[in-house]
Image (cartoon, rainbow, N blue to C red; front, side):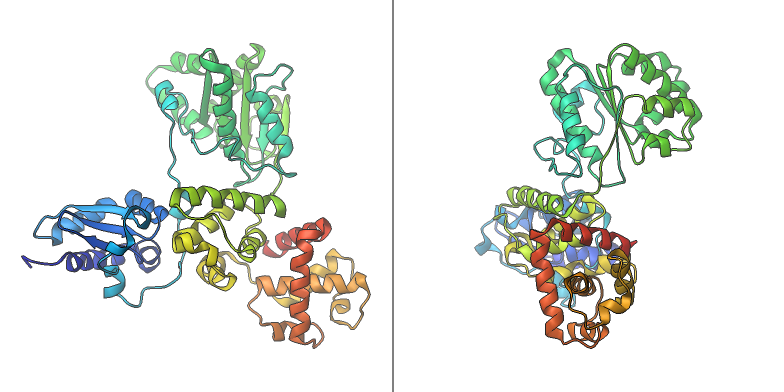
Length: 477
């Protein structure tokens, strides 16, 4: 063991890591790493910059411990990605694959870190001020993709951030998880600090942090300082205000803070997962005052907005990873059509693909993309049958299910039938011939034509695109 080569040490390290992390996580992030050994150093080379960052944040300390245990030469181990080293110098395949040839070739699960590949960063100015806990640099107006679903909220946020007169107060942005509320609130904070300068005092915190800080202030008898910190703000931003519902003392303090700021002409912006009228656990006085300004809902992103978000996200990942920001249209369209409920899930799916294939994303085909994401899809996908699709489509278009199976060729029936076939291809595992048989014994070429026609119409006809959005949401529950 005294002269153990680095590859042998790495193999032992990987054997333990695989057991501790599990096949799926190990295969996704470390399974495609390589080992670079020179006279001066030994370096683990991750397949992508994203994989490198995940390893550094989630496994590097443990890797260091295992390496030290197994390397009698006490060699220093470094971590880089492929773009940081000369690919010709990669002297060894990943010990993981060499020792474990059965490692999966696709991501087996979308674990929580996939959605947090870009580490949360607190800007230096925030750290100095000490009152912008959790503010993230990547969430700016420049990186916010606006569209019909959120353009009003976007315009309101920009107006507040400009310190313009005639504003509503308070402003409440609401919408379900993953609709972009936190991004919008962060962007508002950054822009308000930029336009307001040092004379304007901006305070940003989550409702959870508001609660914990308030409780700590009570316990340490520093409530006066807590009140001064918030009530001297020119702009107070609170994320996820629904968190305080049911917490009597916290709601009381937030109510008085809100009143003090509004009466003094200072600005307050909050986010919630529902409209204040729907937060039944909230104290009526607080709920009423949240409604007295502007309550602004953020709707689910439509298909065009989802595609725009994917393009922007791909550009960001490409800059980080040093590859060309290109992907096949069919892959982006699949993501936009499958991940309809949450922008975070949509971006997370793209993160997963890029983490898996890196710069090869431009060559990634639809079948391989679906294979990479299938384990995650199968966990959350409600069991949907062709029969369910036919009933749902028929109801949506005010038809009978029998119409979709019949020989009727009138446009009012033919187009919904094509939509139903497209949906069957997208969210069931049935083959084209099997789908055809379930639509009155039609040939698989008819189904293929329907699928291609609807793919074309989705990009040309906003009515068809909207119908598909609605139907996908109904079918996926």
